[in-house]
Length: 144
Image (cartoon, rainbow, N blue to C red; front, side, top):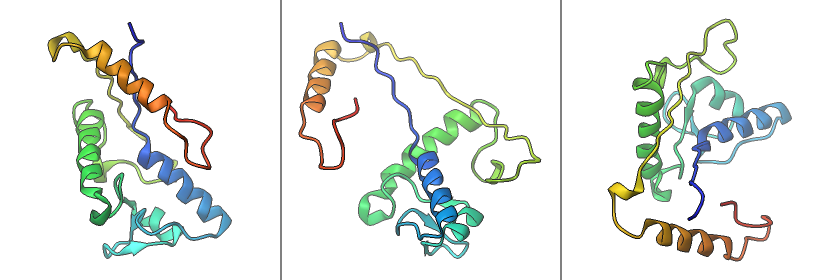
């Protein structure tokens, strides 16, 4: 049997980290990471942090950003609303150190036996396929 599969959604927190690093270096951020208060694409990291409008996984619509929007909404529901924690616009702003963060988490366990037959083999096939892919030039190997 394969080991349990654990996933973590860190797309926006990782993006926020890189925006903060760009702010410290004084360099622009890539287009498609954030919007300003007028809803326009923003490359200035100071404005991006102040507006708190990070785009979802995938960025703008032409890059299928709407799929990331749905994933982000699931995270808000599971980690904010279901847990009784802050969510969406009610989350403490970045750098507001005097306020309580009130961040929530979600841990979900799924019994694959409640779904289609053959989960273990199919999951093993997927993991083998991903592990044997040729890596892109700047990455040592697939992280699965």
